[in-house]
Each structure stands twice: as structure tokens, then as C-alpha cells.
Length: 274
Length: 333
Image 1 (cartoon, chains in turn green, yellow):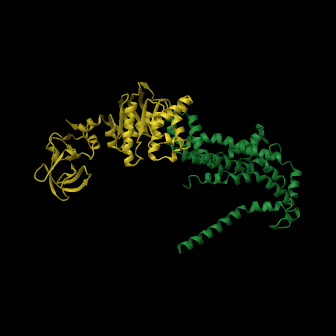
Image 2 (cartoon, chains in turn cyan, purple; image 1 turned 135 degrees about the horizontal axis):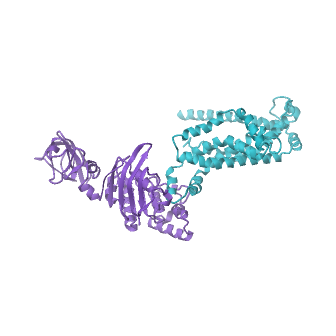
Image 3 (cartoon, chains in turn cyan, red; image 1 turned 90 degrees about the horizontal axis):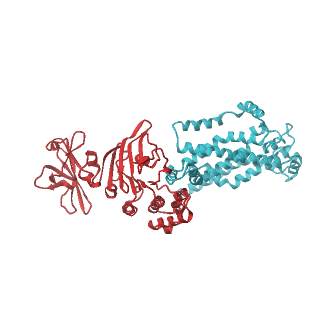
């Protein structure tokens, strides 16, 4: 009897999980479907069956240079991630292994910056970028993405580092390791899974970031978010092209996420499940 | 060489003094054990010597050189942790070789040293394994291997055997003692187990609330404890203490008699009582006797005795084996 209940329960759970997954994935799925329609079909209303035409892709790639914004996206997402890690690793190390009574407050303060609406600082940030010549540069976008994601990177690394027994770091010190060697030979190799998933998540977040990248770039440094935006028109006549552009923009990161999902899940649930 | 000197060492955590004022002189080649109840500051004292904690005031000297402000990497000491603290991402070979790598020792020489250490510790067959594929005893040996490979000035052990099962603990106790006899290097060993302290040490430091209660050889502590705390802590089973009239008779506030120095009789003696629990160990039997007006007293008798629970008995201390203490708990001689 107990077995029958558990089978039924398993079935219900499976259906529920699939349902949730489908709901979450549906916008992406519908974008892909729409991108395979003609403009006429796309404008005609809801339909799950496209005519499987690639004319929108051809038009998008013909109309706009794809490679340049793609290259820009790669540079700013990887660049900002590397800089964020270089700052966050020592910061998280210090907070995890030599905490002070205020460490918790510092962590909360860092997180609280994420709670502020970005639009609130748009004007000052824009003016700073304008006056320092950072506007529409890859360096400027990398800096802003580093700042935007730094709190999350520090928090994630802090959580991983907390899982590493401090004894092992002390053993390294006793064995004659200086601070640098302790980080390179002991802490970092042990934290590789955590650092890898932090890196992946940050690349994804940076790749998808649209608010700042759209407002602080115009042409030279415009990443794929700007590439998509250039196809959105107030008239709404180019839904198929817009979808095709979106698919082209998210495809690289979707593939990266797909191939690294095991690492990502392990990273995101690290410490939560033992 | 490896003498360790502590001069008025003080350690305060957040305004709370953990080590109020400790001065010690550990000689080169000695095996010194820090023993005391949990929270007495013995591990903190070891960590101060290691450099893993900063001293609040006072000085720590190694071979006469002040190292108080030097980090652990620059003190030339090796430490074995309670949790073993092996590097999980390295093989046994890499673990043992790590201190040599940090000291930039030539690779060929390092390999030879690792091989020698592995042979001494019976780890040769496990050199290419990761720590997680080893048993508790083997992990402990790797931790010791990592400590001995670099020939440190002194070894520091922080309750290294407490994660092992009883049988293995006895074996490792002997192995560490033998290692000390072979290497003749200074060893400082922290434990809460007074049996480990008595069996391994050349000299024992008994700590209580961050203070050194007594520093002496195991037999000195056993035969002439400085105070009631040491008398009660050293020796197993614990010393019996009697207060009030029983002690007044000996012109003391309290007297102590070890269970092995109490005579038991059915006919006559100094204190009358009733046998409670009898613990039969085979070689010995520990009788717990309820003495009227005094409380529970432990008596150590031979393995084969015929006292039964509930039986009326008489106890008397062996002459000359009574320890007398004043009101402050200090021994009266």
C-alpha cells in the first residue's frame, strides 16, 4: 500500500516538475518558434506551429553585423567576471577566515546595494561615464558589470569558503606556506567547484544584463542586448526578426548553461544540501 | 635544537582572559604534555606557540630567539591537528611533500625524504592515494609524516588521537612515543586524557582555567600533587576526597586518598560504609563504597574479590599515603 502511494506521489511530482519547467522555458520556446515564422505568421496571433522558415535569420544577419556585438558581449561578460573574481576572492577569504564582529554587516551592506533600483543612480552614473570618457567603451561596460555583480560574487565565494575547514589553511601555514602560496596551493584548488560555478553564473548574469549595457553604450561597445533592442520597433511589425535576433543573442549563453548545468546546480546548492 | 620558552604569556579573547599569565621552560628534546579539562586553555597555549594565535602580551622564544611576532610559517615548527587537516586535493605523496615544496627543497632530495618518511610510517603502499581513500589511523600517520619530513625544531600535537577508536589510540600512542625516542625532537602534546599524559610525557603541564597548576614528571604529579586540582586530575580512578571531621583528624581542610591506597576489610577500619557498584575489569575491581557521613569512595582491589553490592565494609587509608589540603586547596606537606 505504502508503495502504491509513493509511486503515485512520484508521478505527481514528476508531472509537476515538468509543468514548472515548461512554464519557465515557455518564453524561450515561443521565441524560438516565432523566429521560425514569417513576419505575417508572427503578426497573425498565437500559434505553436511555425512554417520553419529561416528568412528572419537571414534578414537579421544581412541587416546587422552580428559578430561585433557578439564579440563585445564576450569581452564584457568575461572581462567583468575575471575582475570581479580578482576582487572577490581576497574579500571572501578575509571575511570567511578572519571574520570580525562587523563582517555580517559588511556582507548585508554589499547585498543591500542590489536592493536599490538601478534607475535611481542612472543619471549620476551616466554623467560620470560621460565625463571620464568611459561611455560606449568596453572598459566602461566591464567596470559597471563588475560593480553590479560583485556583491553576488562575494556572497557566493564567501559561502563556499565557509565550507572549507580552517584547520587545513592553518596546516598550510604551519607547513611554511606564505599567504599567497596558501591561496594558490590550498584554498583555490579546494574551492574550484565553487569558483567555477560562481564564474559561470556571473558570465550568464553579465551576458544578460540589459539595463546598464543599453544605456551606457551606443555603437562601438554595444553588446548583444543592444543588438536585440535594435530590432524592437514601436510598431511591432518585426516580431519574427526580433525573435531571431533574440535567439542569436541568447544561444551562446544557453549552450554554455546547458553544458555546465551539472556544475551550476552543484554550485548553487552547495552547502544547502549535504 | 628546540627549546621553547614562554615568558608571562597572556591571551585575551574579546576582553576575556583565556591565558592570564603563563611562564614555562620546555627543554630541547623533551616530550611535554599539556593536560587539563576542556576549556582550560591548553589548545590555545599550543596555538600561541605555533603562531596561529597572536599573544596579547608576553614573549615566546624558540632556542632563545624571540618569535612572538613571527607568523607560523617562520617559526620552524610542525603541527599535527585533531582533524588531521590533510589537503584533500593532494595525494599522500603530495601531502607529505608539501612542507618541502614550500621550503623550495630540491625535488630529488624531497622525493627521497618523502620515501623515508613513508617507510617509517608504513605508508609506502598508499603514496598515490588521496586522503579520502585512507582509514583514520592512516590519515593520522600522513599528518605525522607531513610533520616529520621537514625536521622541525619541535612538533606540536593538538589532541591527535581523539578521533581514533580505543584500540587504535593505544597503538598510535606507542607509535608516537617511539617516534619521539627515535627523533629525539622536542614534542608538545595537548590532550584531555590523563592516561595519555601519564604514559607519554617526560613532563606534564596541568592546566586549569588558563593557569599552570603544576609542571613536573608524571610520577612527581602522582606522588606529590601541588594542590587538590592536580591530585584529582592525575590518577585513574580519581582520588577520593574527604572533608569535615574525617579531614580534621589529620589537621587539614580536606584529605585525599587514592583508590589504590585504601584498604578494605569486613571487620575493622577507619570509615564504615556499604558497597554500591562493583566494576570488574579482570585485573582489578573498582568498588564504589557509600561511606556514612562522607559520601561515595572508590576502592581499588584485586581482580578476584568476593565483596558484593549491599555488603557492610570498613575502609582505612594506608599509612603515609594521605594527601592533606588547606582551605585554598593547596597541598600541606
